[in-house]
Length: 471
Image (cartoon, rainbow, N blue to C red):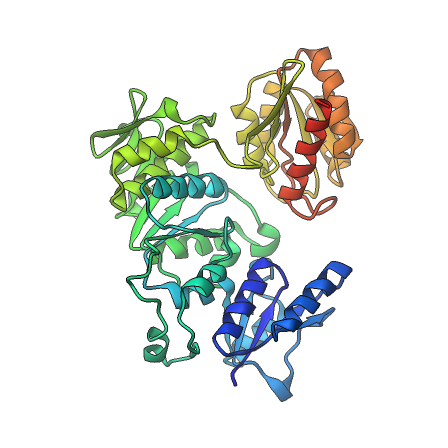
C-alpha cells in the first residue's frame, strides 16, 4: 500500500487525507500543535483509518518514507522537512495540487492577488450559479479543493511520479455535473501547486504582503505571476499601479480591465463607461446595480464579468446575479445601524492596503477600529487616509502601542488604546456621538492571531458585540 503524509490538521489537510484514504492510500496527518480540540479530531479521524500525530516534529522517518507529502496552505514551503523531501525525490505538493490531479479535466478559474480575491471569487460564483452552472467555489473560499475531488473522483488509486497515463485514468468523467471550478488561490497555494493550469486566470491587485514568508517583493511577484503564466486566458486589473506599469509589454495577451474607461489601459476589453460595464463595446450591466461601495468593488465587478463573458455566460444572467449580490462576509459588511451610526465589519482587511481601501470606501467622519498582529508593509497611504477620514482611531491587540506611536509621529492625536474588541465597540458608540461620526468601521490592517483564531472569528466577535447593542 502506498504511504502518504499530510502536513497540517486544518480543513484542507483533513480533506486531502480523506481523499487519499478513499483512493486506497495509507495516510498519516502530521500536526505540530496539540490541544483538546485537535485531540477530538484525532479520535474522529482514527475511526476513518487515518492516523494523526499531534505535537509532531515533522521529520522524515527513514524506516517508513512516504511516497507522497501533501502540504496544507498555512505550512511554509521552505520548512526543513519539505526541503529534504524534495531533495530526496519525494513527490511533495500542496492540497490544491492534489485536487487538481483529480479534477483537471474540468475548466478552472483561478483568482489570485493581494486584495480583492474573495469578493471577485464570490461574484463569479454568484454569476455562474444564476446561469445554472454547477461551479463550486474552493481554495481560500467555500470548499477545500479536495472536498470537491472526494465527491467527484472514481474509487481507484492515484499513482504518482511519471506514470501520467495511470493518473489520467483517474480523472472524473467529463459528463459529470461540474461545469467549472472557481478557485481563490493564495500565494501559499500557488507555491505548492506548480502543475495547476487554470482555463482562466485572474490577477486582482499586487501590493507588498506576506513578505515575512516570501522574503522579497520580487519573489512574491514571481509566485503570483507563475499562475497567470500557466493560465490559458489572463485577466488583469488595469487600475492596479504595479500591474498597469508592466502593461502589455509583460502581459501581451491579457484582457485588461479599468473603472476609468477604455483609454487608460492597454488592449482594453472590459471597462466602465457612462455608468455601464462594457465588454468589447457591448453594455453588460449597470454599475449602480452592485450594492457594494467603493471603486475597488467596481474593479472586482469588472474582473468577475470579464471571466463570465469569456466563459460564455449570457449578460442577462450576469445582470440578475449582480443585482442580487449582497456582498461578502467580513469585507465592508454592514452589521447594524444603531442611533444613526452604521457599524461595518471589514475584518478581512488584514494588511495596510486592504484597510486603506476599506476606509476610503466608507463615509466620513469614521470611527476606525484597528490593530491585531502587525504585518510588514508600507503604511503611508493608510495613514494618509486615516488623517483625511477618521474622526478617531480605537486600537486593539498587540499592534496597538506601535500603531499609537506611528499616529503620534504624523501628528494625529485622536487615538485611544482600548485593547479588546469589546472595549472598542462600547467606546465607539460614545465617541461617534461626540464627533458626529456616521460610521464605526472595523478594518484592522493586521492579522488576527494575537487574539483570535482567524479574521472570520474576529469579525464574528465584532458582529455579536454590535448586535448586543440592539438588545
